[in-house]
Image (cartoon, rainbow, N blue to C red):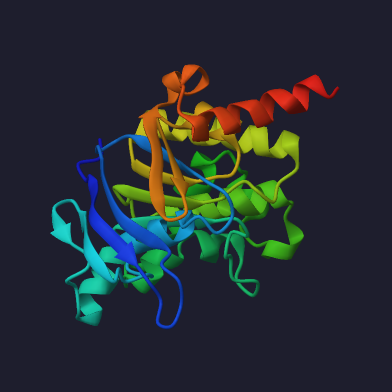
Length: 254
Protein backbone atom coordinates (compact mmCIF):
# COMPACT_ATOMS: atom_id res chain seq x y z
CA UNK A 1 0.00 0.00 0.00
CA UNK A 2 1.32 3.40 -0.98
CA UNK A 3 1.90 5.82 1.88
CA UNK A 4 2.82 8.82 -0.25
CA UNK A 5 0.27 11.49 -1.04
CA UNK A 6 0.88 14.44 -3.35
CA UNK A 7 -0.18 18.02 -2.61
CA UNK A 8 -0.17 21.18 -4.69
CA UNK A 9 -0.50 24.44 -2.75
CA UNK A 10 -1.20 27.52 -4.90
CA UNK A 11 1.15 26.27 -7.60
CA UNK A 12 1.80 28.73 -10.44
CA UNK A 13 4.24 28.59 -13.30
CA UNK A 14 5.15 31.35 -15.73
CA UNK A 15 8.18 30.74 -17.96
CA UNK A 16 10.57 33.64 -18.49
CA UNK A 17 9.16 35.95 -21.13
CA UNK A 18 6.10 33.77 -21.67
CA UNK A 19 2.45 33.61 -20.64
CA UNK A 20 1.32 31.99 -17.40
CA UNK A 21 0.83 28.22 -17.75
CA UNK A 22 -0.36 27.32 -14.23
CA UNK A 23 -2.35 29.62 -11.96
CA UNK A 24 -2.55 28.94 -8.21
CA UNK A 25 -3.51 25.28 -8.40
CA UNK A 26 -4.27 23.66 -5.05
CA UNK A 27 -5.00 19.93 -4.92
CA UNK A 28 -4.42 17.03 -2.54
CA UNK A 29 -4.08 13.54 -4.01
CA UNK A 30 -4.76 10.79 -1.49
CA UNK A 31 -2.20 8.01 -1.19
CA UNK A 32 -3.01 4.89 -3.17
CA UNK A 33 -5.50 6.56 -5.52
CA UNK A 34 -5.48 7.28 -9.26
CA UNK A 35 -6.21 10.84 -10.39
CA UNK A 36 -6.73 11.72 -14.06
CA UNK A 37 -5.87 15.17 -15.45
CA UNK A 38 -7.95 16.10 -18.49
CA UNK A 39 -7.79 19.24 -20.59
CA UNK A 40 -7.16 20.64 -24.03
CA UNK A 41 -3.65 20.65 -25.47
CA UNK A 42 -1.71 23.47 -23.85
CA UNK A 43 -3.95 23.64 -20.79
CA UNK A 44 -1.07 22.90 -18.40
CA UNK A 45 -1.68 19.21 -17.57
CA UNK A 46 1.80 17.92 -18.34
CA UNK A 47 3.43 20.99 -16.77
CA UNK A 48 1.56 20.31 -13.53
CA UNK A 49 2.54 16.63 -13.60
CA UNK A 50 6.21 17.52 -14.09
CA UNK A 51 6.25 19.71 -10.99
CA UNK A 52 5.90 16.51 -8.95
CA UNK A 53 9.29 15.07 -9.97
CA UNK A 54 11.04 18.41 -10.23
CA UNK A 55 11.26 18.57 -14.03
CA UNK A 56 9.35 21.86 -13.78
CA UNK A 57 9.99 24.30 -10.94
CA UNK A 58 6.90 26.33 -10.00
CA UNK A 59 7.24 30.10 -10.09
CA UNK A 60 5.33 30.17 -6.82
CA UNK A 61 3.54 27.78 -4.51
CA UNK A 62 4.62 24.41 -3.17
CA UNK A 63 4.48 20.77 -4.24
CA UNK A 64 4.88 18.11 -1.56
CA UNK A 65 5.33 14.37 -2.00
CA UNK A 66 4.89 12.31 1.15
CA UNK A 67 5.02 15.60 3.08
CA UNK A 68 8.42 16.51 1.63
CA UNK A 69 8.60 19.89 -0.10
CA UNK A 70 9.75 19.22 -3.66
CA UNK A 71 10.01 22.89 -4.58
CA UNK A 72 12.59 23.59 -1.87
CA UNK A 73 14.97 20.84 -3.00
CA UNK A 74 18.25 22.25 -4.29
CA UNK A 75 20.97 19.61 -4.06
CA UNK A 76 21.40 17.07 -6.87
CA UNK A 77 21.31 14.25 -4.31
CA UNK A 78 17.91 15.36 -3.06
CA UNK A 79 16.51 15.57 -6.57
CA UNK A 80 17.92 12.16 -7.55
CA UNK A 81 16.39 10.62 -4.42
CA UNK A 82 13.05 12.27 -5.23
CA UNK A 83 12.98 10.93 -8.78
CA UNK A 84 13.95 7.42 -7.72
CA UNK A 85 10.85 7.43 -5.52
CA UNK A 86 8.62 8.40 -8.44
CA UNK A 87 7.87 6.21 -11.45
CA UNK A 88 7.50 8.03 -14.77
CA UNK A 89 5.77 6.60 -17.83
CA UNK A 90 5.48 8.61 -21.06
CA UNK A 91 3.77 8.04 -24.40
CA UNK A 92 6.82 6.90 -26.34
CA UNK A 93 8.13 4.77 -23.42
CA UNK A 94 11.58 6.46 -23.35
CA UNK A 95 13.33 3.10 -23.71
CA UNK A 96 17.00 3.31 -24.64
CA UNK A 97 17.25 1.89 -28.18
CA UNK A 98 20.70 0.32 -27.67
CA UNK A 99 19.66 -1.52 -24.48
CA UNK A 100 17.96 -4.90 -24.29
CA UNK A 101 14.58 -5.45 -22.65
CA UNK A 102 16.33 -6.85 -19.58
CA UNK A 103 18.63 -3.89 -19.19
CA UNK A 104 15.91 -1.31 -19.86
CA UNK A 105 13.68 -2.94 -17.25
CA UNK A 106 16.44 -2.99 -14.65
CA UNK A 107 18.01 0.36 -15.45
CA UNK A 108 16.77 2.22 -12.38
CA UNK A 109 18.33 -0.44 -10.14
CA UNK A 110 21.55 -0.25 -12.14
CA UNK A 111 21.69 3.51 -11.58
CA UNK A 112 20.99 2.84 -7.89
CA UNK A 113 24.10 0.63 -7.87
CA UNK A 114 22.27 -2.53 -6.84
CA UNK A 115 24.05 -5.91 -7.17
CA UNK A 116 23.88 -7.53 -10.61
CA UNK A 117 21.98 -10.52 -9.26
CA UNK A 118 19.32 -8.27 -7.73
CA UNK A 119 18.98 -6.26 -10.94
CA UNK A 120 18.52 -9.37 -13.06
CA UNK A 121 15.98 -10.91 -10.68
CA UNK A 122 13.99 -7.69 -10.38
CA UNK A 123 14.01 -7.08 -14.14
CA UNK A 124 12.56 -10.56 -14.67
CA UNK A 125 9.97 -10.05 -11.94
CA UNK A 126 8.81 -6.72 -13.39
CA UNK A 127 8.72 -7.87 -17.02
CA UNK A 128 6.64 -10.88 -16.04
CA UNK A 129 4.43 -8.71 -13.81
CA UNK A 130 3.35 -6.68 -16.86
CA UNK A 131 2.50 -9.87 -18.73
CA UNK A 132 5.54 -10.42 -20.95
CA UNK A 133 7.67 -13.51 -21.55
CA UNK A 134 10.98 -12.54 -20.00
CA UNK A 135 12.95 -15.51 -21.34
CA UNK A 136 11.76 -14.92 -24.90
CA UNK A 137 12.19 -11.14 -24.87
CA UNK A 138 15.06 -10.39 -22.47
CA UNK A 139 17.68 -10.00 -25.24
CA UNK A 140 15.58 -8.04 -27.70
CA UNK A 141 16.05 -4.36 -28.46
CA UNK A 142 13.10 -1.94 -28.38
CA UNK A 143 12.77 -1.81 -32.19
CA UNK A 144 12.18 -5.56 -32.16
CA UNK A 145 9.09 -5.17 -29.97
CA UNK A 146 5.53 -4.17 -30.78
CA UNK A 147 4.22 -0.84 -29.47
CA UNK A 148 2.32 -2.59 -26.70
CA UNK A 149 5.36 -4.60 -25.68
CA UNK A 150 7.51 -1.46 -25.54
CA UNK A 151 4.91 0.27 -23.37
CA UNK A 152 4.83 -2.70 -21.02
CA UNK A 153 8.62 -2.65 -20.67
CA UNK A 154 8.43 1.08 -19.96
CA UNK A 155 5.87 0.41 -17.23
CA UNK A 156 8.03 -2.40 -15.83
CA UNK A 157 11.01 -0.04 -15.64
CA UNK A 158 8.95 2.64 -13.90
CA UNK A 159 7.88 0.13 -11.24
CA UNK A 160 11.25 -1.57 -10.73
CA UNK A 161 12.30 0.45 -7.66
CA UNK A 162 8.78 0.06 -6.20
CA UNK A 163 8.06 3.81 -6.15
CA UNK A 164 5.02 4.87 -4.12
CA UNK A 165 4.15 7.54 -6.72
CA UNK A 166 3.63 6.93 -10.44
CA UNK A 167 3.36 9.70 -13.03
CA UNK A 168 1.82 8.73 -16.38
CA UNK A 169 1.81 11.23 -19.25
CA UNK A 170 -0.46 9.99 -22.07
CA UNK A 171 1.08 6.55 -21.54
CA UNK A 172 -1.17 4.71 -24.00
CA UNK A 173 -1.89 7.52 -26.46
CA UNK A 174 0.30 6.19 -29.30
CA UNK A 175 -1.20 2.69 -29.25
CA UNK A 176 -3.90 1.27 -31.50
CA UNK A 177 -7.35 0.97 -29.83
CA UNK A 178 -7.14 -2.78 -29.08
CA UNK A 179 -3.62 -2.58 -27.63
CA UNK A 180 -4.59 0.51 -25.68
CA UNK A 181 -7.52 -1.36 -24.15
CA UNK A 182 -5.21 -4.24 -23.21
CA UNK A 183 -2.75 -1.84 -21.57
CA UNK A 184 -5.56 -0.19 -19.60
CA UNK A 185 -6.63 -3.59 -18.30
CA UNK A 186 -3.04 -4.42 -17.33
CA UNK A 187 -2.71 -1.12 -15.50
CA UNK A 188 -6.01 -1.66 -13.66
CA UNK A 189 -4.88 -5.08 -12.46
CA UNK A 190 -1.49 -3.74 -11.36
CA UNK A 191 -3.04 -0.82 -9.49
CA UNK A 192 -5.42 -3.13 -7.64
CA UNK A 193 -2.39 -5.10 -6.54
CA UNK A 194 0.15 -2.32 -5.91
CA UNK A 195 -1.95 0.68 -4.81
CA UNK A 196 0.37 3.38 -6.14
CA UNK A 197 -0.46 7.08 -5.93
CA UNK A 198 -1.00 7.71 -9.63
CA UNK A 199 -1.31 10.97 -11.54
CA UNK A 200 -2.45 10.27 -15.11
CA UNK A 201 -2.50 12.83 -17.92
CA UNK A 202 -4.89 11.88 -20.71
CA UNK A 203 -7.06 13.44 -23.43
CA UNK A 204 -9.38 10.43 -23.36
CA UNK A 205 -12.45 10.74 -21.12
CA UNK A 206 -13.18 7.02 -21.43
CA UNK A 207 -9.67 6.20 -20.24
CA UNK A 208 -10.03 8.58 -17.31
CA UNK A 209 -13.34 7.03 -16.26
CA UNK A 210 -11.94 3.51 -16.64
CA UNK A 211 -8.69 4.02 -14.73
CA UNK A 212 -9.16 6.90 -12.29
CA UNK A 213 -10.87 7.36 -8.94
CA UNK A 214 -10.96 11.11 -9.49
CA UNK A 215 -11.09 13.35 -12.56
CA UNK A 216 -9.68 16.87 -12.69
CA UNK A 217 -10.13 19.13 -15.71
CA UNK A 218 -7.48 21.78 -16.25
CA UNK A 219 -8.52 24.79 -18.34
CA UNK A 220 -6.10 27.60 -19.14
CA UNK A 221 -3.86 26.67 -16.22
CA UNK A 222 -6.62 26.47 -13.61
CA UNK A 223 -8.75 23.72 -12.09
CA UNK A 224 -12.07 23.91 -13.92
CA UNK A 225 -13.58 20.73 -12.43
CA UNK A 226 -12.64 18.26 -9.71
CA UNK A 227 -14.94 15.32 -8.99
CA UNK A 228 -15.10 11.57 -8.40
CA UNK A 229 -15.02 9.57 -11.63
CA UNK A 230 -18.46 8.10 -10.96
CA UNK A 231 -19.99 11.60 -10.92
CA UNK A 232 -18.59 12.75 -14.27
CA UNK A 233 -21.38 11.62 -16.61
CA UNK A 234 -24.06 13.38 -14.54
CA UNK A 235 -22.08 16.55 -13.75
CA UNK A 236 -23.58 19.95 -14.56
CA UNK A 237 -20.15 21.62 -14.75
CA UNK A 238 -19.98 22.99 -18.29
CA UNK A 239 -16.35 21.90 -18.82
CA UNK A 240 -17.29 18.35 -17.86
CA UNK A 241 -20.41 18.47 -20.03
CA UNK A 242 -18.28 19.47 -23.03
CA UNK A 243 -16.18 16.34 -22.61
CA UNK A 244 -19.19 14.08 -22.11
CA UNK A 245 -20.95 15.65 -25.07
CA UNK A 246 -17.94 15.14 -27.35
CA UNK A 247 -17.85 11.43 -26.55
CA UNK A 248 -21.61 11.03 -27.08
CA UNK A 249 -21.29 12.88 -30.39
CA UNK A 250 -18.85 10.25 -31.65
CA UNK A 251 -21.38 7.50 -31.08
CA UNK A 252 -24.28 9.51 -32.55
CA UNK A 253 -22.34 10.06 -35.79
CA UNK A 254 -22.15 6.33 -36.50
